[in-house]
Length: 127
Ligand code: SF4
Ligand code: SF4
Image (cartoon, rainbow, N blue to C red):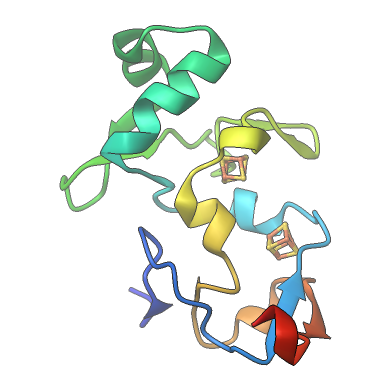
């Protein structure tokens, strides 16, 4: 288990207030094995975006998390996320907080070796 910094689930605090890492859409983090957590309040948004009922979305695209405490998106046999479509996220406008928050609101030791996000300084006025 990775010793996480921050929380993959619901953190809303920037880990480094001086630097923002801009995602380069390399999709590496969509291909790592493991849970892609879906929080309760994300279910209606994602289901609606896909034109599905909540039950349809849950049945077709989710499974229990490894710790059985909530839902995760399904991963394919290759371990990539079920929502990955080529190099795009099928639910990008409503993607889960876990996806949205990496790597600025949560990450793990060594993450810069596996993520291509580019650091830019946060202007003091934008903080
Ligand atoms: S690994 Fe980093 S750069 Fe690549 S898609 Fe994920 S956040 Fe973006
Ligand atoms: S939901 Fe989208 S951004 Fe998140 S892991 Fe899946 S494909 Fe990647």
